[in-house]
Amino acid sequence: MQYLSDKLLRIDARKVASRISHLIRRYVESVESVGASGVVVGMSGGVDSSVVAVLSVRALGKDRVVGLSLPEAETLNPQDRGDAKELAEKLGIRFYEVDLSETLKTLYSSIPVFDPWDRVTNGNLKARVRMLVLYYFANKHRLVVLGTSNRSELLTGYFTKYGDGASDVAPVANLYKTQIYKLASYLGIPEKIISKRPTAGLWPGQFDEDELGVEYRVLDLILYGLESRMPSSEIAAQLKIPVNTVDRVRSTWLSSEHKRSSVPTFELGG
Image (cartoon, rainbow, N blue to C red; front, side, top):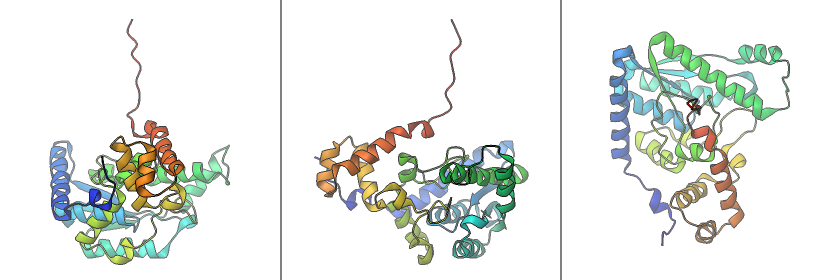
């Protein structure tokens, strides 16, 4: 019988950092023939994007990494903005800040059915505009867009399709959130970044664990159990949580499958 504990999620941070850096370097080398010269990372001031930025510099050197901060008035957090810039300066990478406030206002006023109270739909629009700007920089400077989503987010569908879920390659997509924290500590990410409450920053007061309904330290073990095909009742018993919490995570995982799948095509033969 599988026993769920934090030990299951332990990683050798040194080996993981080395492996991911190696794979980033290999991927960029594989697309150099079509003109790629480096990578661009959206830097939110959070732990996931900070980890990806540091690993990118380890892989390619500071001259081949571009950091992009994409603030906007509704969710502007001066600390996040400052932390992203400070880390970029420490890494010595090129860093740009693009304020999306006016762009979003224009979109809001241009959409006939725009509803200012529909925060989920509007938040998804915001995430897609961010990715639009990242790809503009990528096209302009022949860069690869690195995704910053982790495994916990991807399995629960806690990302925007064609927004933060879009990228050319996703270096940390196979690491659970709790493993990201371990890797961040090894990489020397500032504690003030590691200790922040995780947020997608799509509307004021949005926090990951509030929306997911469970803390990451528990969520990751639930997901591990589900991926190991453990019954919900067994997962709940081991973690000493209500079975409906496990069932809710399972339901979220299954219902978000379309977000992780490639675009379907239709066979027209016959």
